[in-house]
Image 1 (tube, protein in one colour):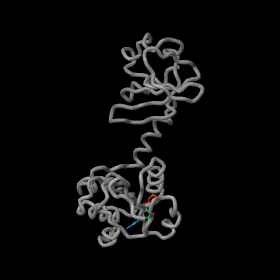
Image 2 (tube, helix red, strand yellow; image 1 turned 180 degrees about the horizontal axis):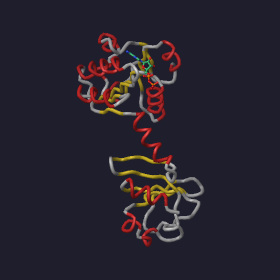
Image 3 (cartoon, rainbow, N blue to C red; image 1 turned 30 degrees about the vertical axis):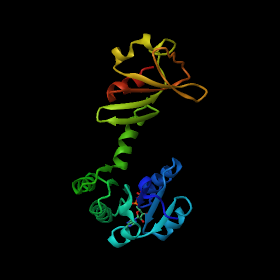
Image 4 (cartoon, rainbow, N blue to C red; image 1 turned 180 degrees about the vertical axis):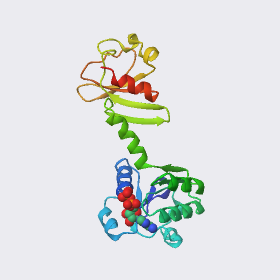
Length: 220
Ligand code: ADP
């Protein structure tokens, strides 16, 4: 079946990264054309994606036949074969695919992709390494860097906020952070506001400059 190219995403390279990305897109209702040069990988994804095709994405003719140029969004998830990644990305740009995402193995690979004109270069290894560093430090159950100096930290509430109206704790002024959300013992997440009273068994999201958010998460 031919998929509606405009609403869907083509994912080239179904290794660990591309496969996880493609399956997550499917889970959330986006149609996916998966492309990989390995027959084994293609077979493993049969029935899991809207369409899976075996092709070498460095071949212009192959991409044309798959109508990849008609997609609005294409992800180049080829990593270890840097040459294939760069050739594929350059073909997509030549086809004028409006939105191209590509995974870079390291900074040099990423720089070349960016210089080619790839709009969205992601560094899964580097980003994950940085993220895990903050988890290893201890206080964060989860850590999402929003920008170079801003993060959201998942943690448990400390004595500064437990048992009082959040609005009366003054944490914004004294600690430079905001408690944005709370998960109660029953498992449901809710937005936090000035009237929220946190309990020891809650889990919270703290937003703020990275150092401040982490410092606050470390307080007990
Ligand atoms: P990961 O680390 O996410 O597993 P890899 O770089 O190891 O990523 O895997 C990338 C995938 O891309 C592999 O499944 C490989 O078969 C596929 N691939 C590599 N080169 C090409 C190409 N020229 N055309 C299509 N698929 C390719």
